[in-house]
Image (cartoon, rainbow, N blue to C red; front, side):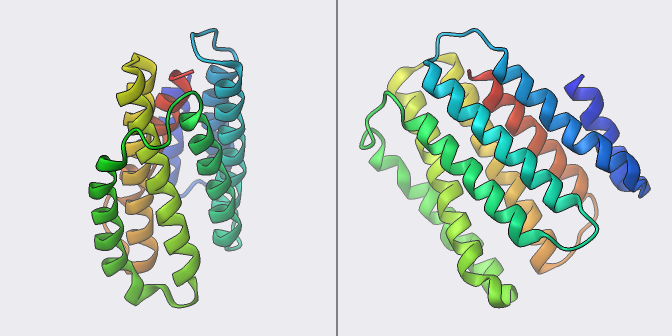
Length: 202
């Protein structure tokens, strides 16, 4: 169901059928949320609740970003809240200092992306930079959880977190630097895969 709904959403984006986008984009996230909510796994109840909360915030972000009027700032705040939920989930039951050494490549990402985006951001410089730092922290904590636990679920969460970084990077470049061919396919496919993998980590 998730795969079918996601494919129909991407198809609708390219065909410009907004009614189908309004249906299938939130539906895909709702289906992914249900995967996490119905999961019976080895993770703690706290981890499950935080992941479900993150998916709920993401659903709000999906709705804001697909509306005809520009609600980018509201979408940014919604996904910022989602990443904070994911950070809390990935940090539960693990040491915050477990993977300090692994922070370096993520900081390199922030420097590179900032150099690409900053000349084009205008008044959005601070919000976008804060968002970059938060999503990098989310991916770093997912890596920390995987290295600390070695669980398959933690690996799925880390892969999902990295796909989320790719998706948001593609979105930021498409919005602020310049539109490019295949943007929607790349942004949405990596986004839905990211959320699905994070949901499957429960």
